Amino acid sequence: MTLVVFYLLAAVTLLGAMGVVVTRNVVYAALALLLSLMGVAGIYLLLFAEFLALVQVLIYGGAITVVILFAIMLTRLREYKGVMENPQWPLGLLAATALFLVLVAAFLVDSPRMNVEERLAVPFLLLGGSLFSQWAIAFEVASLVLLVALIGAIIVARGEDSRERP
Image (cartoon, rainbow, N blue to C red; front, side, top):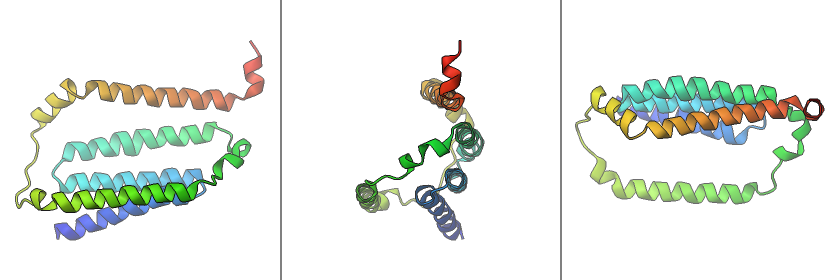
């Protein structure tokens, strides 16, 4: 039963990721990203990583998707129609396919070593200690990057005429 749920969540995640890449509408791409992130949260639940699933839903599914949607709403996409068309998409497809094949090969090589019958949950005290000691700077850097992206979207949305005024 767990394997069926895993395959279902993996399909949801992959379909959401394909939706991000394939769609031409940026709002639909953000919603497809949300779908993909929710599929990853479900996979975390299957791995008994409840805290990571909660973080995935709250931070990535909620906050980052909202920031992306705000950035989309604040920018004027009508001015950037030509930017959305990229003639290098075959090269990107080739690079993505090559990366996918490398990941599949790595998975197939390491899968016998990772095949264990009993899954263990990580204790919250150990996880919390690790997050606040080893990974605190990474979370702060990610929040600064999101803040800079939001400020950049506001500056782009203001336009040229508002920059000239004091």
